[in-house]
Image 1 (cartoon, rainbow, N blue to C red):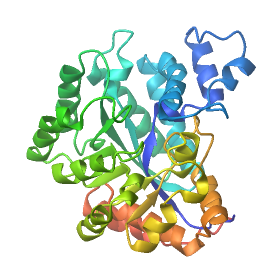
Image 2 (cartoon, rainbow, N blue to C red; image 1 turned 180 degrees about the vertical axis):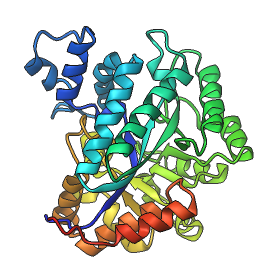
Image 3 (cartoon, one colour; image 1 turned 90 degrees about the vertical axis):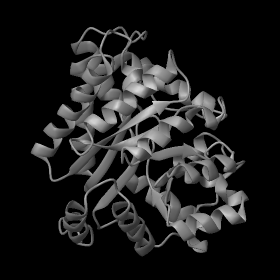
Length: 337
């Protein structure tokens, strides 16, 4: 499918978007033991395969990139290369989310992680016509999760509008009760930190309801909201967009098969739907591939896909002046393709 417009992406994980080529090169350069004897074996384990049966198996694919991304040099380079790849695909705005606490196993502090990623994103912006921001993810599981999440929240405030656009809650949905994280989002709202929350990906439409009640401006995935008609009406009334990642959903088998994925029904009912890749490398996808699959499986028209980008930019965690400038560009055709 020829998609002749500029694009925006809101739901994109840094560690899930470390390409096999970049991962192997960084591991070799910085003498990091990947646990694999050669590139071919390594590469075969960097993306999800047909044996994946659920979200929890999918999440295991993060083990390899997280082994590599424990150093400021690899984090900076990963962020830079991702930003350059996005720009090459005519993405003009992207929010790159990452969990600082996931990158501290070799002695870095969370702030060092944030500064390293932001340095890489700034480098990419200096060389390419793209605007990039980071989103800091608090985690559902991990060592000393409460303390680590509080530190992530503190850093989100410290770096807000200095490269960081907001926060998120990520991880294995349903493993712990959502209510355990309420105080964090109450404080985020008090401090004026925008947030999206992973909710309603792996079932649990009630998690979408909870995220709305807490003040989430967007919902990460949110597709199981389709099971609750009142919830759908709330999303429409409050104009809260869903960050839908179609390929990732299929690979995690969050619905029995692609024919009952609700993206078309959500769109047709008037829910604000944005389209993202989730994890470009783990899912082996790109925005163009997402568009092609949606056009093939659900007859999404090119103008609908363009509108999804307008929705994404309108609800980006970005100031109004920057949005206006990007919106003007977003609606221009790319003359070179």
